[in-house]
Amino acid sequence: MMQSDLRHGIRENATQVTHQLIQVMLVGFAIGMTRTVVPALAESEFGLTRGSFLLLASFVVAFGAVKAVMNFIAGRWSERIGRKRVLFWGWVAALPIPVMIWAAPDWNWIVAATVLLGVNQGLCWSMTQTAKLDITRAEERGLTMGLNEFSGYVGVAIAGIVTAYAAEWLGARTGLLVFGMAVVLLALLLTVVWVKDTLPWARAETAAHKAAPPKSLPRYPQGVSEHPTTGEVFALMTWRDRRLFAISQAGLVEKFVDALVWALFPVFLVTRGASLTEVGWIVGTYGFVWGGLQLFTGRLSDHVGRFWPNVLGMWICGAGVAMVVMGAGALWWSVSAGVAGFGMALLYPNLSAAVADITPPAWRGSAIGIYRFWRDLGYAIGALGLGLAASLTGAAETAFWFVAISMFVSGAVLFWLSEETHPRLNPASPRELADA
Image (cartoon, rainbow, N blue to C red; front, side, top):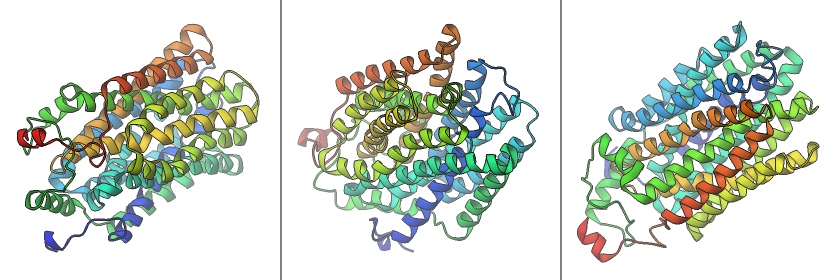
């Protein structure tokens, strides 16, 4: 197919968008299967000593560090060999995970399995996101990200609940083995048979911009070559462009919340008398609200912009985390989880959309990969921080306050250093175009 024949848009590429949404839901299933059963049964099933907060957080630290690096690699790699090949190898890396959890003699095997999970998530989730941005239009970017994250995090929530029931019916290890193998094998089949490579769409967009620049040009970083090196893109994302720095640090800190929900929230609930299925539903509330509302919050940002949804999302999410330890009971914890999920829904697709707004298609894959590197490094840094906070005080509640305060401070940095990135609401000025 010629580049000129490739059309952009959700409706124009409905079949491939659907396949990519199925892929990201399966990616969500893969991580979701470790969200409820593994931490809640870390002591009874996998031999972890009670109160070992740092050791409990260690598997999230390992996951975050590996996923961050793989995000970085995936972005650059996908611009060289294509999106589909990266997606395929991500699923190949996931094949041993269910077997390792099933056979695990101790906690070290769980940590090793989550290293492979980090490889899978870094390659596969990055590619589902990048591929959909390749084939949709700029004015659909918020909706595109909302659909992507909706599908993925609803998948996380569903898997957490389903595996809690599977663990009760079949036993923890067998339940995770059956569910996990079904997910990975189905994903591999769908990738090989139905998923198309979307790199040609990204190249067609670059060519179209050169031939006929759009009326509302984004405020791309100034003084950057058409094809910057990996080091140049890393510098832009990390410190040279203050907007991209602000977005990257917000992405890093918001992952503290997910690390908390994954590593300590189930343990916190179990020690206060919640059953395994109650834990699945309470933690699932966070995932369902986060995932479900992104259908609307992503689309909302296409109309009102990215800035305020991102800033307010950071603060609302932090408030939801603080609420958890300010009350008790399944209803209170579910409401608190829902508030945190609502804040996350506001910020999560729109931080990524903001990066996509102000990075050219020629190196957008690399920029998103580096943003996702910093964002998912937040798993490791956050898990280490909350594990230390809980260990030093001997109380899980301290970890919740550590995360809540971090979210409030990071939201303030985003408010101070960032700006509106939507090209229609804040387009490049004539001077910026002349300097480009």
